[in-house]
Picture 1 (cartoon, rainbow, N blue to C red):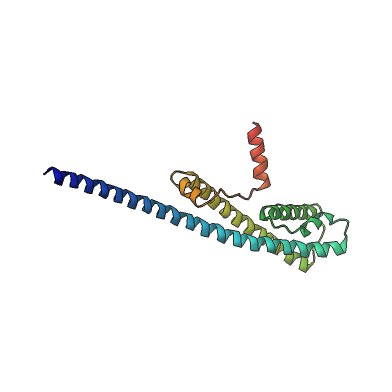
Picture 2 (spheres, rainbow, N blue to C red):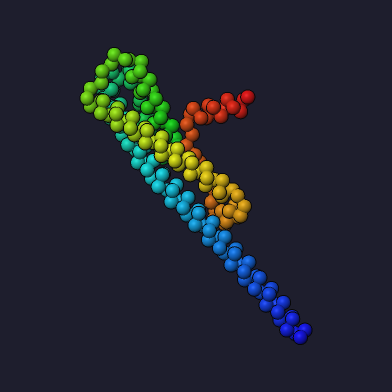
Length: 185
């Protein structure tokens, strides 16, 4: 009788260990599945954004070429778009600055009438900027969720084993200025 009781205890302990290992493996699989979903979303938005930034660079380049022929002195501010950057965050800032300067220039000259080609390019650039903003917002939303996810327990342990790190977000200059002002107050 004592022998059966000892065997029953050993069986219960082994069964408990097996159940704990199974639960642990299920948790790991769930975390990995969620991380793979985030990875797919991030990669897709990065790919779309890279294409849109390339399109925006091309459109600004075409507009710069047209304006450079008309009056090189007036359109010097667009010359920094030639600095194609490997860093997508830096390229985004450069393109946004060039686009904003172009908009400011055109706003300061309400009597200026662009040619049909310029209108088409400007319309395409405007649409591209809207699409870039939408993709950046989506990307940032996913990155916020991803960064929070890999920071929580037990996800942070799995993330460390997988060498996952927090990812950088696209920052809108207006948001950065707001954050700076918020920190000062």
